[in-house]
Length: 532
Ligand SMILES: [Zn+2]
Image 1: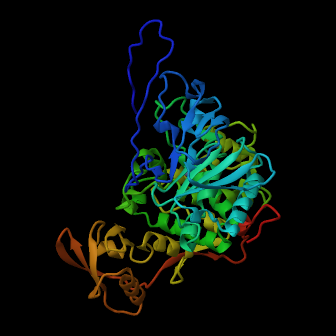
Image 2: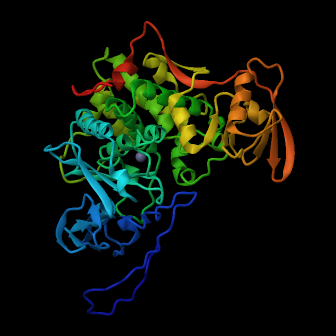
Image 3: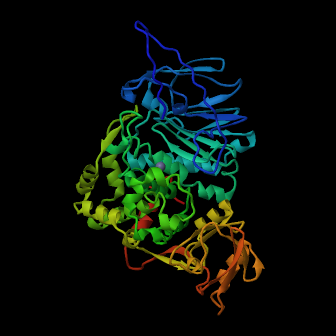
């Protein structure tokens, strides 16, 4: 972002420079500077490095030193060469790997080995504002150990010297999951490991970020592997970089026991329902959400259905599930995405390297497992402006249904966000204070005139609460009158009549009898210690 142009006098052999960096607090949008609090700090080197322009990042070598407040501990994947008091000297490291290796530090930290005695070592490093949060529940540590074992069984390779899950439990930093080659920078609320809803919400975080070490860091789309930080990235393969990672994270969450099989099915049903209710499907293809990633990452949640968001994450879960089901079907259930992972991520062990790929190489790896028109398969799903790709669900022996039984993942999401998600009934998402986050064009709430940014003040003559709205939707099934909603539209009161009589509707997967249950197989652990 910033260049300093200097006229260097002849004969100069070195330049000394200092840089001040101003840290910020968490805000409403992505703010990577919100990385510190009174008792902790996560150093992201890219925010404090100065380097000479014009050389590949892999060829600029740093010898970093870091001075922490007294008594603070630290953790990072960077090898340490020396330590004197609270000043740490790291071994020489290239700029690209330095930027890829954040340092987690603070007063309250605890380390949990996840494969004790194993090679390469993999560990969980927990940092928090306070000591109580470091008591990570034992059953959760067991599941993280299984995650490490299941990832080894799935990928059958390691592209790191050691791996650190750098987990920060704090209400004072931005919530984040940031992948790196030898670590991940994972930040959640301080109570996230002890509150059951928050815990379910973060169940996919580690499996996703860990999978990135293979898919994204080691194997990277050629357009995202730029030689330095001045070249713009090209995001058309983000549905692989992020989307396949999201799929692999989904199956590893189940195989490690972080989600039960039933929770995993509710998760997939929710993804399918959300994508199936994207009004913007009619004008924006999935491929376009990837190309527009740099805009959509920062877009607000309001109008998300009509605009679409970074849908290359969730929708690609459905597409890769269909790839998995198709591979199984084509090979009489002898080959699957597991075989793709063995082939695609094989190679170099140890020190991080990047091996780029193109769409054509992806297709040829799949053809090596089961010949098929994979290019046509992907192109039709990526470029379509039509219904959501649900073929993976039906192809793996299940169907998407809606009924009045709560979806466990959706309920947890509503609890954690203090919101109400009525996407699959009246097509509305609303905050606890009545502000509308989204109204889906073509669905009953929108058709009654409800829009994002309006605030609902009353439901059927009663003062608004999420419970009032839930009750009105539930009772609509037996009521002959419409749901009456009063809104505050920038100070002007308006009345809306929602014509809806479907009752509560939540997405689920239902087994299709007399078909192979490939999804059941996909979610099953590979290691003998597993089992939900
Ligand atoms: Zn990711």
